[in-house]
Amino acid sequence: MKKYIFPLFLVFISSFSNTAFAQSKKKSISEPPMQSDSSQFYSSSSTKTGLGLASAEAFTGASSSLVALIRFDEKDAIQAYLSLPSTSPFTFSVGGIYKHTVTETPQGAGLHLGGGLSLGTFSKTGVAGIDVSDLISAAGGTGIGSSTGFALRLSGVAGLHFPLAVASKVMVHLDGGPTFSLLDGNAGFEIGAHSMLLGVSVVYML
Image 1: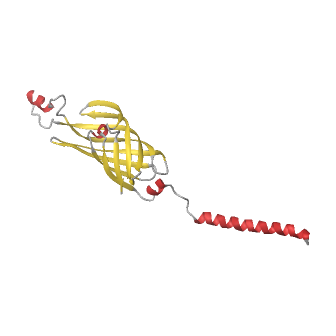
Image 2 (image 1 turned 135 degrees about the vertical axis):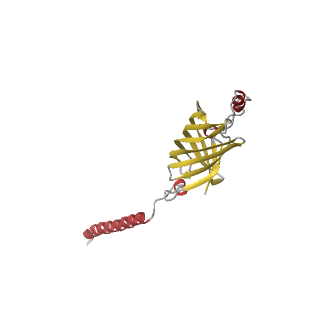
Image 3 (image 1 turned 135 degrees about the horizontal axis):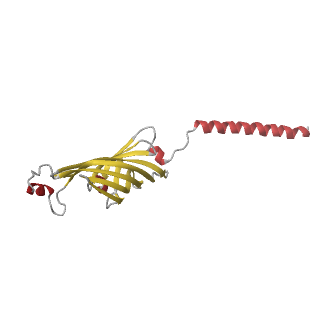
């Protein structure tokens, strides 16, 4: 009888192991995988939108701008800008920057790269204390419509983004990079942060 005990013991252990393995496999299939904080906040199933303020003078020509951040998934987003630098003369700037997240922590802090374009008008008054329209009038022209000019800016962007520790729905973006500008035919180029405040944008995600 003793010689049958060990084979029976092996059969019992084998059947118990198979049952446990089957239950473990069933559990792993039924339970969805854990998601990081950022993947839950920026779910790919719906577009996330945020509104806020930005300081991006090198990109918009204005010291402050209204911004809307539209994040399509965990990687891709567009940040739109609207600026009204002055009302007399009336000047404006609209633009957008595409941002692709290169790497990101589970908490939502990461590095993004991209590029953007802005269009608008700028005031010619105040350069070296001279109004260009006055010079045109002195030369015999009317000077009408000469106080503003057309502005075009192209920028490559590299930046950081992170949520505020005290308010997880508030995202902070810091942006900068090379910017090519065309102001009424006068070309310019600069590399650096988009403003003295490091091109900061503060956005509340809705």
